[in-house]
Amino acid sequence: MSRSPYEWLTTAVNLHHGDLGLAKWLAFLLEAVSAVMLFALMVLTCSDVIGRYVFNNSINGTTELTELALGIIVFCQIPVVTLTGAHVVVDILDRVLPDWFATVCSFIMSLAIGIGCIFVADRIWFQALRSLRRGVVTEFLLIPVSYFVQFIAIMMYLTAAILIYKAITSLFCRKKEAA
Figure 1 (cartoon, rainbow, N blue to C red):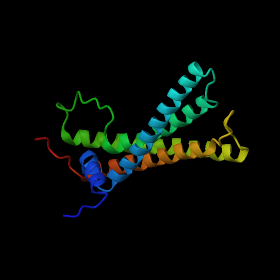
Figure 2 (tube, rainbow, N blue to C red):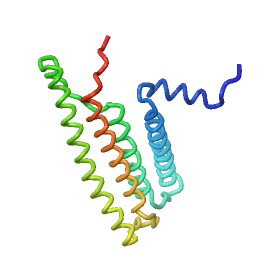
Figure 3 (cartoon, rainbow, N blue to C red):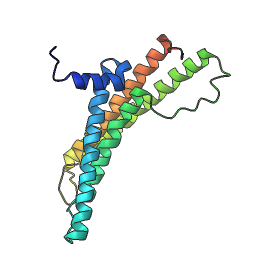
């Protein structure tokens, strides 16, 4: 029996995000980017501390790299949390309110937040273009900031698209009943 070299990856992704269809690969990719950045941040921090206390010399630009890595980690996870529905939900009144009310509320909230994310992403994109025009770079390592800001804007656009998709599907697709 021959197995594909990527079968273990497909099995792992299906196990973790099986009910997301093709979007499971997007969630996996964004989680992988976040994990790699988190590992790099851990290595950077440990190396900086060791360098500071053992060799009396820290790594130049650690603060800048930490800020950029945290931006990537956080904004990679916003679409994943939105896609998987892993955010905090307060469902105190769900038992007493009718199902149609929850559906309408879900539609309105997802649509409103999605539209809000579009406005936020537009503003972030504007700031990224302005940073690109002005040639804004980090203070010590001279890394162009605009590319990271564009990445943040793209992640916000992606989040908005997911929210609007969820708003539309909340009207037409019934949730699976819990067994």
